[in-house]
Structure formats: structure tokens, C-alpha cells
Length: 118
Image 1 (tube, helix red, strand yellow):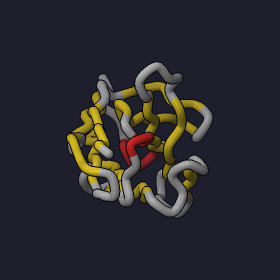
Image 2: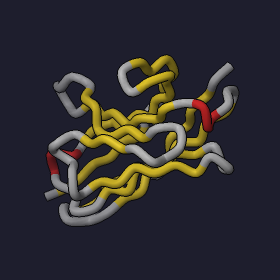
Image 3: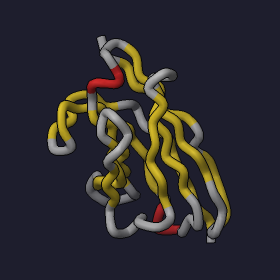
């Protein structure tokens, strides 16, 4: 059974930073694409960032480019999302996901709340 557990969320002022972590277990972590998604209040879940199995290729939503950085440590079965210059509109529940490609995620974490105050 695959488990993804996010951590690192919290309350931060606009302009601040947070680093989210997602620890995976139950599958060969290094073989899969990892992604971060978020769902804000009253909004649909949206893509934030993804990283390929090797860590060489990343992708970002336009809204977070230049502010967020996704990375992974395959030795620790962990993917990270470094979030800088946070804005109130970044407030959301952030989910990590694991999949066979950047367009097919089959396992999801429970989410971690990020709240950015103005």
C-alpha cells in the first residue's frame, strides 16, 4: 500500500516562506513522477509543480514560477516544495501525488494547510 504524508504547512505572513515535505512509502519512490497540487477555498484543485523520477525535469504552474521550487531526495523517499514570496492567494490545502507520468497520478496524500495572511 502506498502512503504519502505531507508536512510543513502553517500560517505565514505575505512575503514569507515555507517548505513542504512529502514522505512516500509503499512503492519504489525513485521510479515515479511526483507532483504538488493545491485546492484553495471554493476553488478546484489545481496543479502546482511536478518533478520527474530523476529530478532533472520540473514543471510549474505560471502562478508560482519563480517563487516555488520542487525537488526530491530519492534516498529519503521525499519530495519538497520550497515556497518563497508567498501571497494570500497561495492559501490552500497542498497535496502531494505520485504517478507514472506528469498526466497520471494514482496516489495522493491527505494534504497540509497553508495559510498566507496579508
